[in-house]
Length: 134
Image (cartoon, rainbow, N blue to C red; front, top):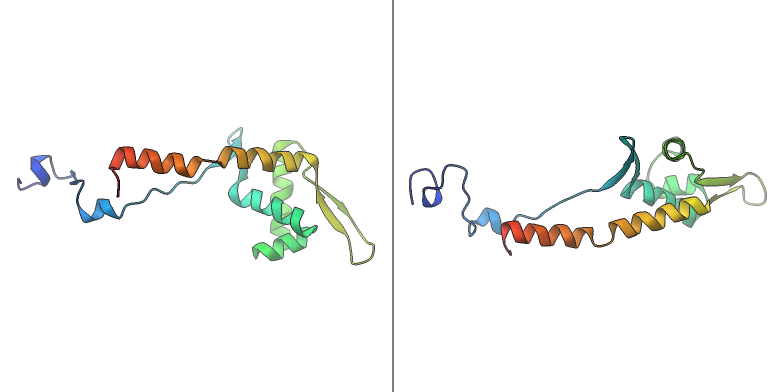
């Protein structure tokens, strides 16, 4: 072994069997943009799913630990950027109003989940191909 590193390969070479390589794990995040602006992400889809599950924007905000105003702002931002209505609210009534996801919101959630399906496995496989098994 030379003075610069493994097998005289230079100062930035890492031997595949080194302890550092064994413990490396890939991490990735994916999102969807429209005209360079964020429209869908794991968190935004989770917000929409929470609205659908709770039937309430405030309930979804509580569930995610954020302020109602932030949840409302993110939904409005998505609606404006996508030019589609994602929620429909009914005020009043017994127990207060309700908020429902539109069919377009449900379709976006479905497509995003389809897009996400298998990405982690693909990243893991590509990592193993590049860095070897751990």
